[in-house]
Length: 320
Image (tube, rainbow, N blue to C red; front, side, top):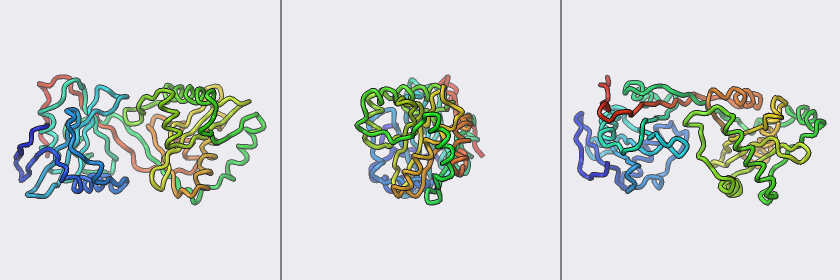
């Protein structure tokens, strides 16, 4: 919605498009909405001329009390728009209806993502005709308590079979980067995923540039060939681990556990206090790996879905 006039929806709220002056209030609302799980800075929120990215705010008098953001979910899910809501739950329905009345063309569904203990968002999506479609898990590990000694015997057994773990150098030869990309691609094809856990597609060059720029990768080799990998990304004081993959010919040996344990031991040695990870609940093998490593699973993330097959039927049911 790109018009600049105000929309009085009733109930004491006034709706209007986001303005740059709203950034501090919106940053606070969004940070509060995720219970401080992440901190959002005002600089992240700016007016956009992109017709596919629309943010509204709800005001009670002069105060911004809620916000709604509609944007493409991502290249991996090109038919979906994402709806994010934050602030006073009583304003979610008028914000949603205002966005719903002016949807960009070319999309067939709306998706919303929230954690199961974020009550105001959960209540809204459940009442507004969305389907609880997918569940994902997040987990954290206190690296101050992590002890690689628990995995020493596994390392010794696999070493005797020819497997060795190492940190991949940024100046590794092209053959290693080609092998890494092939294994990365194989992992994406094999692992169960949902829209939230499906990463943006990357070319071999894009993956390499991203790793060199901001990641650390550990690999397992057998006679020089890369057969398993795990990637770490610094996020402030913590690390996020992702894309742990073992080649199908080498699974069920403990390689995923070992390569990730080595990566976490490195992270602890570098002074990182904690590591995070996550994935779809359908990925039971990685749930087991992370349990062995000591991760503590947190509340589930829920991806809600609503079909947009016919614009003529896009009317929200009444909310209590």
